[in-house]
Structures are given as structure tokens and as C-alpha cells.
Amino acid sequence: MKSAWMIAATTSGSGKTTIARGLMALFTKKGYRVQPFKCGPDYIDTKFHEAVCGRPSINLDTFMATPEHVRELFSHYEADADISIVEGMMGLFDGYDRDKGSSAEIASVLDIPVVLVVDAKSAAYSMAPLLQGFVNFRKDVHIAGVIYNKVGSERHFKMLQEVCSDLGIACFGYLPKDAALEQGSRYLGLDFSEEPDSQTLMNLLEAHVNWKALLELVVPTMGTTSFHHGNCQFPPWELSVLIARNAESFSFIYQETIERFGNVQYFDPETDVPDFSGTGADVTAKLYQESAIMGKYYYQIPKEKDRYLHLHLQHQGQQDDHWL
Image (cartoon, rainbow, N blue to C red):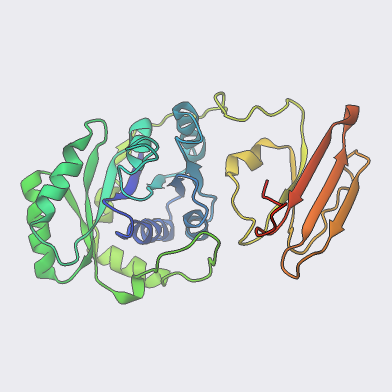
């Protein structure tokens, strides 16, 4: 049995990213090996996770992947961790088609408990019907308890505790209202440099959240797997792969994809011309610089039996160009 749970929320903007990242940092500071996960194809929150946990955050996505593959990813990466924390996306039941692909679906697939983050600003006992609906909406999704966010005072928190007591669900604590912790809505594109102070956040969570009770949220160990149900069928031979990657604009790639290749090297497509030497191929590389920020790259890599790989990248806005 291992500690594992999902941090989800009633809606976007409720504070699940702040609380998830803060708990990851808190448990890591206490000496636990924390494996972070993120629901959906998100590449912003995963960077925050990796920064505080010291290990890559893994995307779990039932839109792009099968349930079997999601279970194998979770099993593979949580194997050497003490705690696994999955951060949800949007509201708990928000998916691409009703609740398909939602955080709730992933919690059900993994059979892990959900800790629901609720924005309690300007509300008290009205939280009762809201939480009752979430708790009873899907019987295959186990909501273990609640962490309230933006709580105004101790008196306010006691009123919110009564809600959990009447509904028979755990109240793990709260995060007080603090302007220093608020993050503006982020756009996809992106600046990863600004984030709330982790030490302040950890101090508040340690003081107001029953983190020891969270450790009691355990699930059976799934056992290690070998990705038998992977979505991408790679050739059996070892591949040498060059990947376009930098700190921000070329930063989204699934960790398991990198680990499937034999030899991985990186280049920054905004500043570098990749070096194909040593690849065993007769390589022709051409660079056409058309922008001070991002030019057009055209790489033609002859392979055996006249097979070619072409990479064409260009700023949007040109009618005859598009992203691959």
C-alpha cells in the first residue's frame, strides 16, 4: 500500500494548482519521494511539479491514451515513490464530452481517492448542497475529503467544517485568503518564471492542513509494468533521436516518449542548427532565417531505401505555412 491521491476542484481557478504544488513541496521537504502527475496534456503545471519534486511530472490523459496505458504509466512512475500526487484539470467532471476524459474518469481508472479543493470565498453552509452533489454524482469516484481555499477567518473555517461533518466527509483543512498566493489566469504560450513563494505556501499548508491524514490515503501497489499497451509502437531497434526543446516555447513532450528512445539529444530550434553527425545517415540540413525570433527550418534526412524525414517549422501568420 502506498499513499496516493488526486487533488481536484469544483471549477477552474479554485486553487488546485497552488495547493497541489504546495503539498508536493511540503512532502518533498519532509524527506518523502513524491511522484507528481498531471491530468491532461498540460505542460505548465508539470514544470512547477518538477521544480519542487526534483523528478519529471507525468501526464495522464484518457483522451490521447487508453485507460490501460494510463494505468501502466501510473504504475511505472510511482513504483519508487513514497507518495503519488495527481493534479486534476479544470473542474472534477469537466471532460471533452461531458465527463469523458475528465479528472474524475482518471481517478476512476486509477482507483485513487480525490481530495477536492473548494473556493470558499463568500460562502459557508451553501457549500453543503454543492459538495453533496459532487460526492454522490459518480459512485466510482471516491471523494475522500475537502481542502477549503480562500478562507477568511477561523470562524469561517468552523462553519465550513460543519458542512463536512453533516455530509460525513473528511475536512483536511484550509488555506487562508492571501493575496500573495493568487496566480492570474495563464495563457498557453508562456512564461514559467513567476510563481508564488513556495516557502510561504508550505508554511501555511503545514499550519492549516492535516497533512498526516493525507498520508493515510493509500492505494494498493499496482506493480511495475513494461508499457505493453503503449499507444506508440516504436521499432525494436535502438533509435538515436534529436528533439527540438528549450525552456519555454518547445517544452511539451511526454516523459515516457523520451524514455522509449535509445539515445536522445536536444537542440534549441530558436537558436541552434541541429548537429546530425554520428547518426549514420547522409544528412543535408538547410536553414532559412526569416525572423529574428523564429526562422524557417527545413531538414531533409535521407534514410535507408529512400525514406525521408522532413521537419518544417514556421511562425503562424503565413498563409502557405503551418505547424506540424
